[in-house]
Length: 329
Image (cartoon, rainbow, N blue to C red; front, side):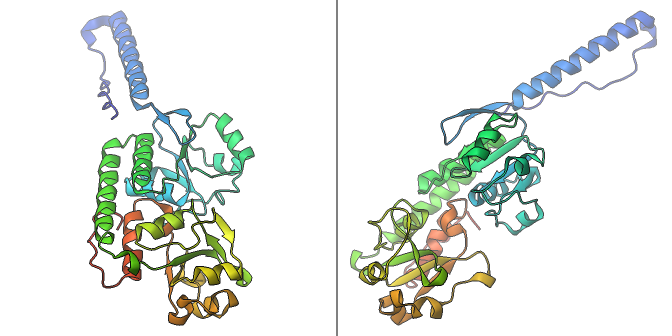
């Protein structure tokens, strides 16, 4: 927690009885005092953060922040620091107020010039931002850059919030928000534990379905983690990362539900298009037209992550008693 700034001296005219030399001396002493107070404020504002890459980064007052990554931006807003954000990347789509901020490009295709053009005094970047050439330039710039871990577990989401809060000097708010998210995850987990193993649905997540070619989620992905947190089973867990899935693999997976993500109603996937494709036509999901579409909170593992797990669980198991959550709304 940062030390409170010291009160600044109030400038008043030197008393006349001091004489000219006394007035000059007093004025000099006041100037020195103000300089010392300013230096104390700067030192008090500075803090050292160990980021996701293991780097120790010294952060100052951080009044002009560029946020890169939807989870990063959402967390900064949830901590009440929206007024300090001067720009964000294209994956930052929540809350809607983020669209008032300048856009510095897609998080994996950033330009150093674009990021630095808004004169930030701190860059908060999600792990996986890039390209490397841009990151190298940003690391060598005078502006501190803090890399934020993916945190695709309940504990990881809470740690991410605490790290961002520490970088902003908002440790108390970060601890409160992280604690609320942890409690919400625990409440969802307790409800999911009541599901019999045989009733758990097989859920395939599609990152995209362009040209009828499914790009599906395997292990080590945020989608795989979220499916498990919501009580589902990912039948493609044996593959790693996001991979094109062959028709035979989808048929063998026999999903009960297909899960996708949208950034707006205009690009929402349509069940008739998905289930008309040969890869899905014979699956249990096609027979019941079971397509679930959710927003970016599904994969962000930010402040709304526990709420996303709860919402997905409700969509999968409408009769399951689920808790009312405190955070992420």
